[in-house]
Image 1 (cartoon, rainbow, N blue to C red):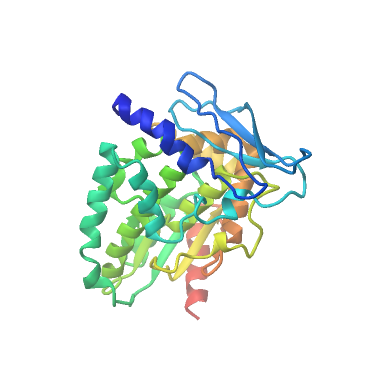
Image 2: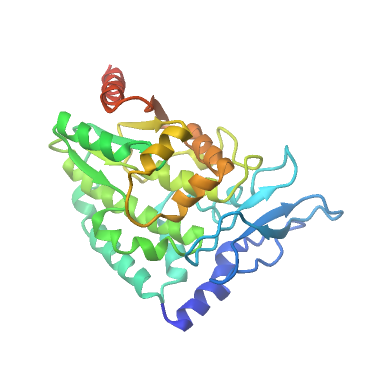
Length: 332
């Protein structure tokens, strides 16, 4: 990234994306951007001041990411405080319910070469929209969700063979080379990247499901759940029934969503067998029990479709059996 691009991103555009200026007596104080050399900052909303204003104060985080990602966590001081302001204004929320908002966010940082490439890829798929717009899926579209280490890769691979289905994942391979760049950026931009991936893969799945079933490793639920968990505390998460948990009307809806639930002990054991670079979210899952709670709680609150929870603590065979039973029950 060029120096001028970095200044744009962590200057005026970052403030436009994340300062979330509120009207009336509610406003947020200026957000201070963290640099590579500085510790990650966590921001708290102070609602106790005499003017009933929202003010941000910072404290050091226990997590020190190796990348330059700015992790804005808005948490509430009171035990029964209001919903995080980000989720009361859908224009500021990191959970996207349409493609237009994702494109708007990306265009704000459109001078970046990676963003230009992402938008070019998306536009190529958008041109094919007319060929799929009127189609409906004829075969099951099954999504498997879960935290890192829950067993998604193993289970989706087995289900693919048993159901003679095609296997998909998000972000799709065509965007994978951009993932490291976008996950180093502020949360709202990272979520916009993942949302583009969701819409691209939805186009592919819609065509695939005309002739065979599709098994999907993660989809919109993951994109939204991490956006929620990264930007809230347990006390200011959107409550059950909040519009944040509704499925995007314009995004292809799966036939069923299975959520693989495991204990932290099981998850940690499975993670030890992984190789490669550890992601920001994986570090947060390992070191922050409250983050894990927020993430699990977000998955439980999604509706239409809600997640069907599968106890994935046992052997691979037992988990596969449970998922097949869940799929059979869903058909009836």
